[in-house]
Image 1: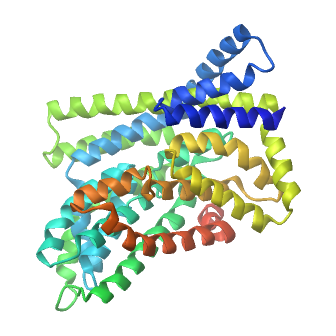
Image 2: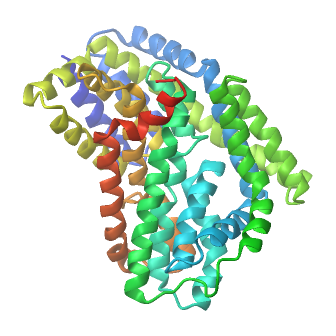
Image 3: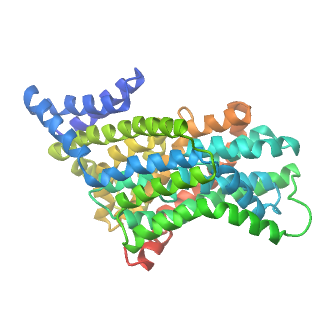
Length: 433
């Protein structure tokens, strides 16, 4: 019955998504369809309503709307240019300085804003005039911008990691946040290395002259208030000064004060930001609530146990099992957004990796890393298409360069998958893993 229920869920889900039904409704309908095999309609509907309410009532869920609001305030607050100048002051001497700067700034801005698409739009727009002036290939610039933008989703504060914490049954948010730094920076480093290689092939040089320490000091001072958000919020959460939810509220206050000081947020723009954040938060929280129905159906029909038995029946080799999971997640990520995919695949795969002793913290980073690749992979690939639009080029011209980035990012994924210290090193040093 378990595998039959799984096939029903996946079949109904894919059909509904193909017809353009919103993902939250698709998950709810697919879950109800599966459970109707075993319980009457009235029982199924009442249970679904109860599970949705329970899923939306978790206190830790409050952090997501606050971090969304903080990110939108940062997007409006004129942060991108300061971060671009800061990274340019550090990496500007490298070949293809503007490509490298784009990748580095995306990691910082994506972490602060919590959105890969926002990073690609804001940072890409900031470096574009300089790239045009120096004759950079627009398709290469779009590929670099798109490929590097999701790195910030791994670097805390990360809504994806908070969602995983909820889906996994309460994995420590502080531990996940610490675990995200190295994989996120690894992703950014992979993009920087590819950018340097391609820049050398194209003959793009770095900025001439000696390293300008004075300019670095000035740019650091300008960027410091924005960078301090990460230090204050994450430092407070990891040190136990406040919870993730309290940290998210502090992030909102900090981002608002910063935007007002930079004179980029007015009463009107603040209201628009709040409304937009409320809409986005409503969609995310409702999706999490509906996905709680799916989690209950999976537990009731013992789908995770059946999937675990099926995979372990194929092979008992953890290396092969993890490789199979990565392939499945990579394929799913090309069609699904990060949040619903986390909610669907966590209860399926987490019990399996626990059988061979993998930490839920490491698996969380593997999961999010995989699904972030979907942000830059057609046919969905929202972040990639934003980068292409900003760069005023086409998918056909951009994809040959993207292949280079895919190879590097996938190598990073293998390192995160098979070297636990990459994810667990910092949490272990802090005594959280």
